[in-house]
Length: 77
Image 1 (cartoon, helix red, strand yellow):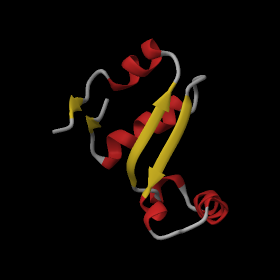
Image 2 (image 1 turned 90 degrees about the vertical axis):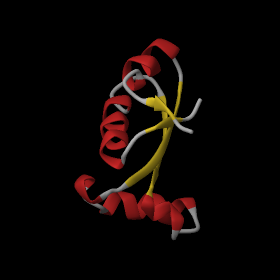
Image 3 (image 1 turned 120 degrees about the horizontal axis):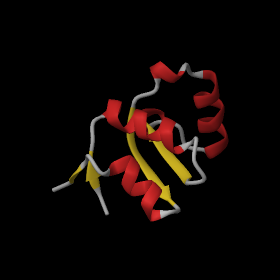
Image 4 (image 1 turned 180 degrees about the horizontal axis):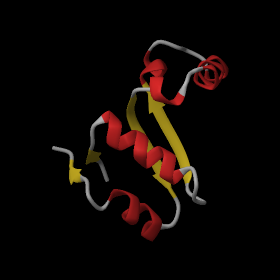
């Protein structure tokens, strides 16, 4: 399912999801210009959380937990 959210909403979902047992794959803007996973992980680790602009996130795990985190989002069209 693809849902619509702005960067601020995605950041809040990422923060909350990382405190659960969900698998979280976040996609910050840096992922568009950095070509290796190792470089991306290093860049993100060196970035202040407020400096990250999220373009997307994938969540995998308990559907009830995912629903709780995303229930206020609309379907992306």
